[in-house]
Length: 259
Image 1 (cartoon, helix red, strand yellow):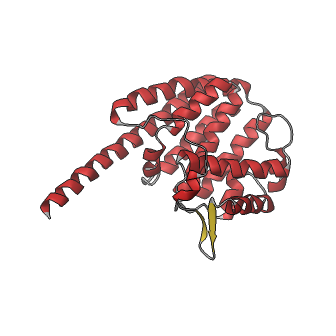
Image 2: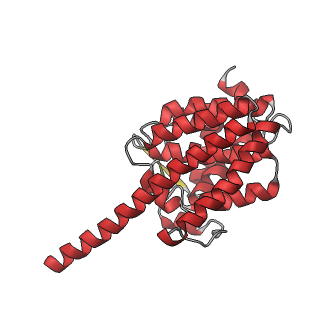
Image 3: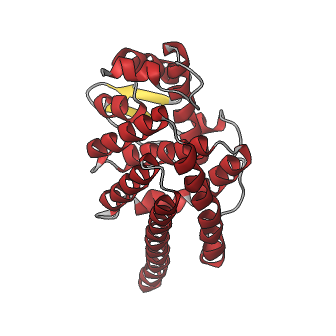
């Protein structure tokens, strides 16, 4: 199946074919949402066109129209020979305000990940039971797209958010989906740094692959175990990043005093 055919068959919840215009709107909405939540920030370079085609399962013409719309809105800026970048902070002020207010710290880290475990494990259990053929195909496409972003933290963050939201959509519980969304977004400012850690993208790719395989096998217990394993990895990398930030602050303070 070609990329255009995949784009036409992509569905939000198996509700029928998605028209090219709606698909373009979803790409625009996705980029806007990633900027709004801080997953993409001013100055970030978007992945190359060939990667975005895979990440969004969209045709090149539709992707280009979506990028033109974002450029018209002043949200992204194409630079000749240099790719497409998120514009300065003024672009973010045009977007809706954040709908979460907690910042991740060592104090609430354990509570945050305990909540994610409770919510996301239940989500993948339901997803494994309810996944339809189209859902499984969508997850397979996303897993295949992982190969293109192994050295691209920005591309990974886009694909990672899409993967987790797809799991929630398959589970079909609107309340769980909203709670999972809020919890996912709580520590984005930490995970932005964590995604640059050597080996993290490869590790997450393996975790995502196992989760998708368990859902494809309609095995709730296997899916729950795979998600628990994945969240443990996320927590470990988050803790390492927080520890690194504290070290950087202390080191900076010592250098300042030594001047």
